[in-house]
Amino acid sequence: MQIPFLDLSHPEAPWTEQLEQVASDVIRSGRYLHGQHTEKLEERLRNLYGTKEAICVSNGLDALRLIITSYLRLGRLKRGDKVAVPANTYIASVLPITEFGLVPLFIDVRPDSRNMDLDLLKNKLTSEVKAVMLVHLYGNPVWNAELMNQLHERGIIIIEDNAQAIGAVASSPGFNDKSNTGGLGDASATSFYPTKNIGALGDAGAVATSDPQLANMIRTLANYGSDYRYHNIEEGYNCRIDELQAAFINVKLDYLTQITNERRHTATLYTENITNNHVRVPAIDKESRQVWHQYVISSPARNQLSNYLRANGIGTDIHYPVPPYQQPCYAGRYVIDCPVTDRLSNEILSLPIASVTDAQAGYIIETINRFSPDSVCS
Ligand SMILES: *Cc1c(COP(=O)(O)O)cnc(C)c1O
Image (cartoon, rainbow, N blue to C red; front, side, top):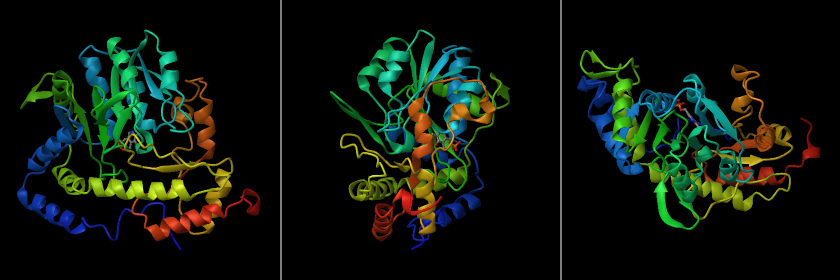
């Protein structure tokens, strides 16, 4: 059996004809930016996240950049402020912090959730920390309502990088409220990069917030800093979403529950049936709703395992092989102690999780369960 890590052409995808139809509609409409598809998508995102505002933008990184620079321009953050960010994340969570002269405070992750260790965060909070960037990595919510209330009492801004977690629902011990990630903090960024759970056919992203002042600044900055036509009150950018991408995303959003349930089903099969002692599987959290952007196992024999799986026709990937603070662009800038993230970067392996049939999952499980580190050479 040959199972690629990810096949974006989704030969059996139910939405292909609808995508062709809306593409044709947009082509014939003559309206390619700021049209009805973008408006509709913003409304749907407001409803999904329970926020007062949603602003569609060019991509997830720009969504984060707009959030950070808007807080600076509004005077609510200033250069040199520290922003806590998980050590284990994609570099796009960190770039907007450093780009605008803020200082990342890398917080190590928990070995089980691979998300920011909120107890560590609590211990590392000093008066210099003015914002926390929560990343719901792999589609797993990271949230603690009590701690977040404490952060707010101290005036600390909570930004969510929800790039991997659209549709996820967080829960927190002792609190009955369950809320969608992306609507938990002060502002969130969503990515519609093609491989994300809801992927555009190109780049797109969104900001969600219930802060009207922030939303206003973001809308202005994303459109050349213009409040009305040919009138520029800020040195802005062009971070608009294409009407075509908004139309595609609206089609895919109808399938959010289905896409999520399929991933949750496959993740449950993996977690319940992978029994190899050399492999650690991620836990299924019964309280929150994980959306499994990635299904990430770990093994001290990771490289042997990935070679063995490839030899057996199974594609895998690593998210991420090098933590952001060890990237060459930050060479020598961060001497930090994040042993869990360091270890994970050598041990983690992502299995196929998008559009995986039960037969494919069964083959993957059986193949992994037969793996023994000494039986292959890497
Ligand atoms: C994909 C991703 C981003 C960036 O989104 P783009 O749309 O690719 O710019 C940011 N953060 C995380 C955690 C991501 O996975």
